[in-house]
Image (tube, rainbow, N blue to C red; front, side):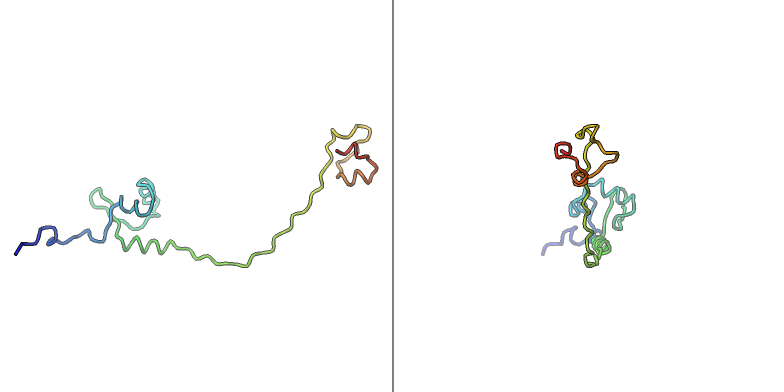
Length: 120
């Protein structure tokens, strides 16, 4: 009978942990983003062993569940109707003798007797 190999007989103390590179790959972020998230304290719980950063898989899953937002659907409010604005007559299209003292809309200018040649 063969003796079990040293790898299988030794306890795996890092079973259930993933390293920083694997965490970034699974989450789809860069290594620098993970480092920044840790510094800003918005990352999942992590463990530092020497210079190596490890994440416990269960802690990452719990952190992800805490990040979930519930959206409450409210009935849509009635939208305000947009008011029509009157188009003002540009001063340069009206001769100085026919120019009114204040800006007026095209329809108001027509009702005051200005001809169409001054309005366009």
